[in-house]
Length: 593
Image (tube, rainbow, N blue to C red; front, side, top):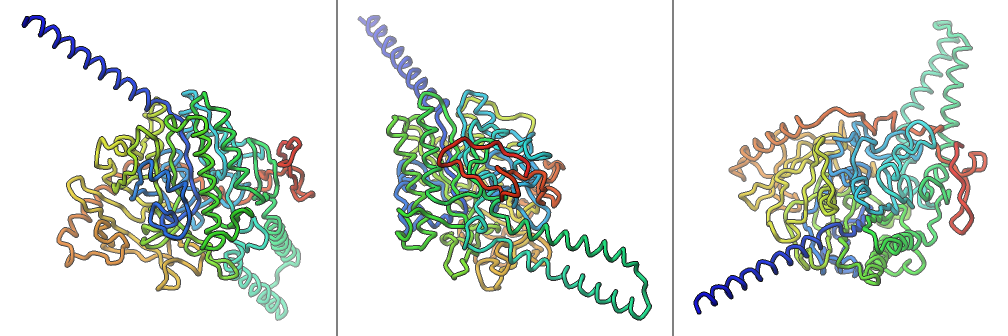
């Protein structure tokens, strides 16, 4: 009798083991090679969404991601500007490592015919997922370069970085792209040309006077060459800015221009339709979709169905139209029973651009909640961005995680989910988010996060493992203008060096757990651990700095400047590079204008 009982007991134990193995097998299978949808807004403030506390803008579909998934409340962009932030996102590495951080004033690509871009040596997550059989697509904004040496080498193109399909803008959505919305460049060009024009004028007058009284004899031929150079430079400059919209604001499908210049009519609907069609083509294949919205970067726009419907002007209309688009993507997943097989992530490339004011005085920038500053700064308003992850049955539903995380974490997270291997020949600065969002661990792997302003180390965040404190030091801070404002309104963005900043020695110190608004810097008198915190952070900086290697600077002036021989043009410069194949017909191959 006892022997029979023991056999039944052993059989039950064996059955439990088999069941547990089956459950583990199912769980392992469920988190292996899911579909990946990455939704990235442009210049969206963390305070613009209902799930982050906004009470007036309507974002039910984005809020639905929060309700059905995880909300990251301290999700940090790796840079406060588009180009370096997106480079870090795609590679999982600080942009300084790939040369995508500028030492000059300009920290992003401004022209389609620049030669800089994300280097081909960089390994992006679409490259790795494509090797694992994923269908990959980028829809929307790129802003990481296009060509190197000719107008058709496409060395920096999305298709050269692992995407099978590209439908979108090679650069970004400038004010200059939309007639009547003003110019990003006009104020800067006027300011930067004043001194050279004055020097040239004074030099010419001085030459004429000295030539007249006989103190100086300069051959008229030399003067002629000088005036010819000045004239040619002015003609090229005037031509370029007069045709800026045609030369830089165009829509591409893969390597072909299909609309030049870009039309804003139903643009979000077109991007959304492309995303939905891509999903429907790949219902039986694992896919990676990166839907990179043009909203809410200026120039602001919204279709007739949304224009004038929000409580926050055109900016609010654009946010609500983007939320509609997110809803369409979620609906198509549900329609094809893909919810449980798909990880959806929503974020912004950096904080809201608080200095964006239209020529009519309307606020065209977003809301960063309680956080100080905005785009182009490493105050929390510039880098603390929305971070939402939904994956039913795998990711906790309705959870809030206050630990420091980074947009660089998406790289190792989805690479691991795709059963791909992380590169072993380089440092990956991101960490796998899955243990955190599944509730398996409670502490972020980011003890330190380094915040760069262009190529200059601006601030460091330290979250000790044995403390709730989140320390943040600033080695320099931007000079706001006007001084008592929350941004650099006189220059449209804040800059990172020279007279635009104030250096701090000792560094400014904040504890974000007690002062998330960064209002009151701590001092040795108000914080007994002041010098200890500074010392530990300096050691981390020294270690981080030793891990950096010299690489070509992709945002040098040489790589930033417009190069006519790299210009993409679907007709010719004499025809103002005009074409529109969105309504039908076959797009022309791009050609040198």
